[in-house]
Amino acid sequence: MVAPDWDSSDYFQHEDYGNLFALMGRSEYSTGLCADYRSYLGWYPEARKQKIDDFGSYDVTLYPVDSPTGTIAVEIRLPFQVNELFNDPDTMYLNRGYFLEIRSAAVKWDSGLEHEQIIGNTQGIMITYNDGFTSYLLDASPSPYLVYDWGSIPDKRDVVLKDGQQFATPDLKIDCASRADSGFDVTIELVENW
Image 1 (cartoon, rainbow, N blue to C red):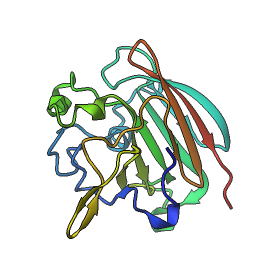
Image 2 (cartoon, one colour):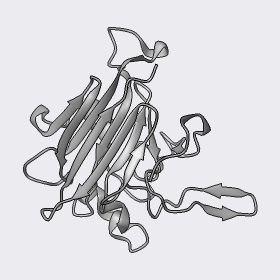
Image 3 (cartoon, helix red, strand yellow):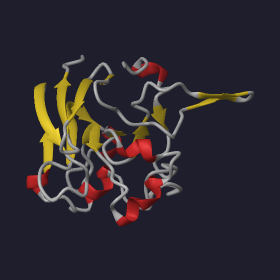
Image 4 (cartoon, rainbow, N blue to C red):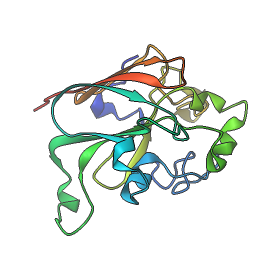
């Protein structure tokens, strides 16, 4: 699966405070924080988070957020993509980028993900775009949008990148393969896109 063109922004969920899977959103499906905010709050031990901030290809093994060992979040920062609105060295604002995580219904705050209609979102990698501070949930799944008379919306029953799929933008390419131990082998290519 390849995401639509960057300019179309159809695959963006313009929902920082409306993210249905995050406490800082509408928290309809989860009262947990998304990876972006957990990182801002310093809740990830550095040894459990992989940070990528240079062009190239990287291999990471990513595990669900409740795993006792291994990498549980990937922070990707696009080189030279500083958000000018937040370019203040005295703040915690950073370059534009992405966060990857695998949510787990076994986590108390994510137990709402056990519902049969949305449990599929625990079976892949959730991706958020980050403009330097604000996060936006991305629809990384190739599932078709739900179409109504008034328009179409992403199918929130399935927004994660699953086994054997690819997510791509002009800046980034992500391929993943599931592992027997509930993790994913992820190849991330950060592309120089001037």
